[in-house]
Image 1 (cartoon, rainbow, N blue to C red):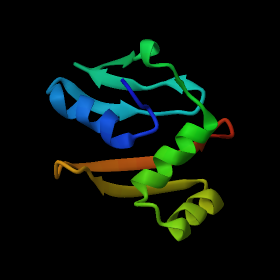
Image 2 (image 1 turned 180 degrees about the vertical axis):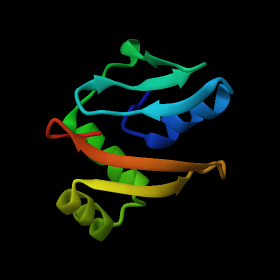
Image 3 (image 1 turned 30 degrees about the vertical axis):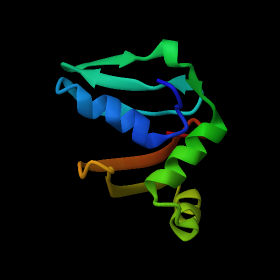
Image 4 (image 1 turned 45 degrees about the vertical axis):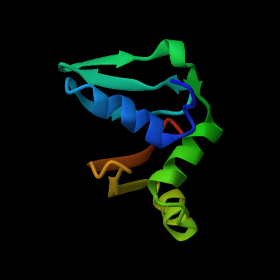
Length: 101
């Protein structure tokens, strides 16, 4: 994975593998994919830092500062995101042990 700060790159990896059903992103953890029912962390891609998670969540919220502020205030946000390829995703952004996930 060349740039874990670019959510589109992460989505492209998932879209290329029909066995991936979910993407799990958490601050201070490696990107993980649910493949054939099991969560597989992509340790070779490195760990997503707190700043990386913020960038990714902002990207998923289409760069809308008001939506991001609402997420920070509520500590949770369920929404839909459509990738550049047109694939729609259900997203649940929340705080887990004080960090964005």
